[in-house]
Length: 514
Image (cartoon, rainbow, N blue to C red; front, side, top):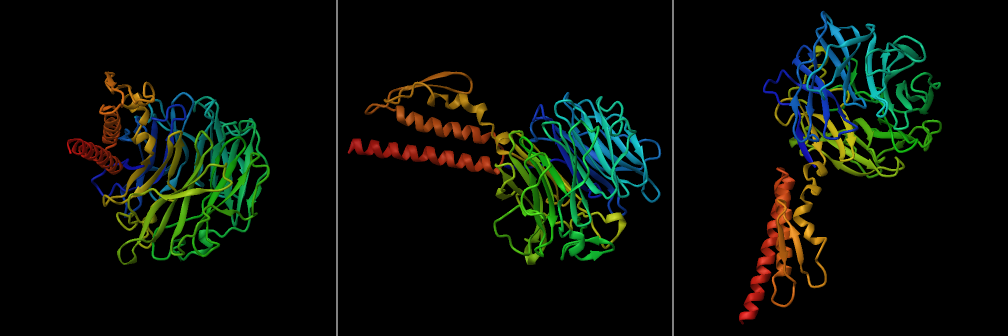
């Protein structure tokens, strides 16, 4: 795996946080990342900005600026998705000055893979709109959005690639689905079912649609009696925060559909006195829920009590493997300084259990560096209320805020299969697959298509030596393409293999001469 920088700024005023990432479900090389981009972190002034990649996240390029309508001073809270023909959409929350008055819900569309964006379409106008999310049907390209307007959850959908929008049934945009909602996250499963999870007090609730958003089920409590971060952490100026930290944190649910009718919903929970990720799982599309009524802990291994996990994001790969990424804060720095890593857990059994806990970040980052003041409050800082995560067949792509450059920038982690696409080097080592039989003779084809003869490995013949050296050379060449620390280490190991082969041959020659 390789940490890759997504945004590049020289101005500390352009801090980046609260991110979203979306991978084209029909071309995993294409992806778009978006976040807040501050212009004055001390007064909480910002807009949204995006970047795009066309090589699986190995390199990134800034998009053209997102246009604003007359009277808008900025946009907030990005949520990204693709349709089935390669268009990208972003749901945004425009606001005006003075006082950052919310305008409503707006949709942006890009027809060139996120390089540029068209003019926004304001689909709903209310000063109470907030916490919007967006998802698409990967087959039909139908678009779905949910958001809060006060405590009301509102809903909109487009069945024509964003040309027009409506609510459920024949209703106008902004159908009210529930009246006790905070921070709904909407997802579309591969079978077309629409799932919305949200928090209501100390309960996680869930609604679903099985008819393309025409109707929705009644809200069901799927996790009761949870301990939210707001109910257990210290509060400064109405914002909860971890001890020893000043950035605001909230319990916001995240959800995904997995293989078949699998649904997973996860959240940050303080029931143990330290923040941990809990989740509930359904195997029948959200009709019934498995495990404890208050949820199961995602990680079963021991975790130090002074480490807190928060801001979980959960997604499924196309093969049904489910990954959950989250921030981990604790005394990781000199003198016990509170620093943040990104952690990931993976489930290969439709969420029945999660394993493979690993730290994704190369090194922890400092949330006090280049930290914007939340709404200009000098006592409360901001790293985002969420961060991005998406997945392809290659692996999971978290998109997080990081300060290793002394500026709040966005980073992602490119999976090993993208950094080291072994199939591109099969020609170098294909000699292993044909011609190598009992005596070790055969042929191999190099990366330029040249055919080479490997003589049989009889007594005194160099065939076996060729095989060992060529294998090491193939590994060395492939590793050299990686341009990462992992690649350098693999090259070192390959060179050591060639040295051992040479030493072995020198020893044999010395024995023969003796």
